[in-house]
Amino acid sequence: MTIEAIQEEIIDEFAMFDDWMQRYEYMIELGKSLPLIETQYKTDDNIIKGCQSRVWVHAELNNGKLVFTADSDAIITKGIIAILIRAFSNQRPQDIIEADTDFIDEIGLKEHLSPTRANGLVSMVKQLKLYAIAYQTQLN
Amino acid sequence: MLDVTKIRADFPILDREVNGKPLVYLDNAATSQTPKHVIDVIVDYYQRLNANIHRGVHTLSQEATDAYEQARLKVQKHFNIAKAHEVILTSGTTHSINLVANGFSSLLGKGDELLVSAMEHHSNIVPWQMLCERTGAILKVIPMNIDGELVMEAFDQLLSERTKLVFCNHVSNALGTINPIKEIIAKAHEVGAAVLVDGAQAAPHIQADLQALDVDFYTISAHKVCGPTGVGMLYGKEAWLKKLPPYQGGGEMIAEVTFDKATYAELPHKFEAGTPNICGGIAFGAALDYMNQIGFDAIATYEHGLLEYATQELLKIGGLKIYGTAVEKTAVISFNIEGIHPYDIGTILDKLGIAVRTGHHCAQPIMDFYQIPGTVRASFSFYNTKEEVDVLVAGVARAKNMLL
Image 1 (tube, each protein chain N blue to C red):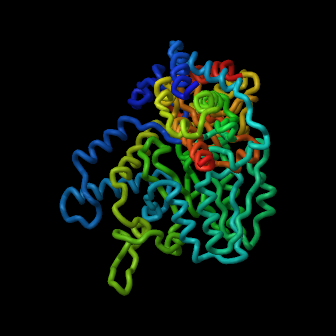
Image 2 (cartoon, chains in turn green, purple):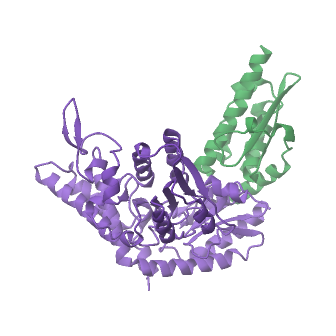
Image 3 (tube, rainbow over the protein chains, first blue to last red):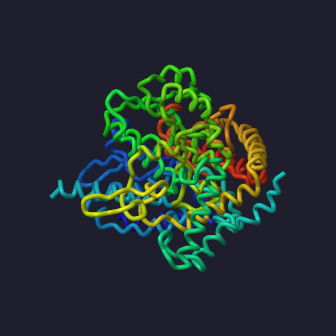
């Protein structure tokens, strides 16, 4: 599936929820089901700055596609990462670089998150894109 | 007895909704809300009084100067300070502490020791670390126990003739502990050390008598006592303020300037370079008036009731642990629920209209001590109610159900 198609799918899923509580409960569920990052990658180097909770992201190239794994010590943050990983993991670096991130607004995440959290979200997206740029350079 | 319904009517912001719910503001240790009385003073200043102060011959400047200097006198009176020029109006506690730390640069050297309490806010740690880097002095830590109380026996042992400065907060922002500053000051003075007390968190709850305390420096921020941000006080004993060099150069702080040399103004202006926060200073005075009109005894009694009730109700939630269980504490409750990150709780509470603070509260050493990433902190003011405590407790219980 393309990044765009996955994002559409996520938007549709979130459209089913009537209120914030269902939305958060869903994110918490996603957080709990996030495949964990391997312990060896939970290093200080892999921590994303700008989040109040600790967030680790690891990226590796697999058959020309970038695979992300991540973890956080806060469950709602993990839910947000799970959504981002679903949208961006297992995609070609160039596609990740070019991908639009408006879906975050559309699923009501940005407006419903506190400013520091929103910053964390922005930092996470930025970090995923930076990984993509780094690996794209490597591929070139 | 304090009439909380009447008091709440003084605070327009308490009527607003957040995320569709009535605001329950429990982040008072970060900043207090502003009563109409103070907002009116701010509006009136810009509508009727705005002019640059000191040295102006015109009427507006005179009136603004009078109002600003009147505010200094209110601060002086409130803290029972001997002389008005011992009140330096700063931009707040952080500015006040940096001013003193900078001043000691030329007074310290290798081998000198500074003692800092284990429960300080970063703003009462970092300026001293910077001072140590400049001077070669050494920073030593007065430890605390598991309840969040300073270990006074350890303090006694750390004190020596090498000790030049001791700094400690009057009340801990992260734990609410009220520190035994009178004892700390007396003991530090016995070895000839000066003491700076960060009163930022005490000021909303305790009216400190600075002459009785015999403290050398005391700092507060106006926005913790129902005043505006960007203004605060540094109290310093006259002898110390005369000894310390100016912090910033500029207008206001000079007596005469030629290109060869400048001579400095008398206290307090020596430390008040540039145009000050005039409106803020005047509003600071008005905020102290407002709080004094309610009365600090009534405030302390009322807030203690809230603290006891909130502590009792929160502890009914399984897995909830309170950090900071000192015998003497203000209405601050720092807590976590086992297995849940404080940030998650804070996020859910925000959705319910409840404002609390999460994180390390700019006191990372305390979090390291308890080996936790942070806490959820609910901090109460005299305008909070028991009903709001109930909303908080229900909110925390709901967050726990969602998150576990």
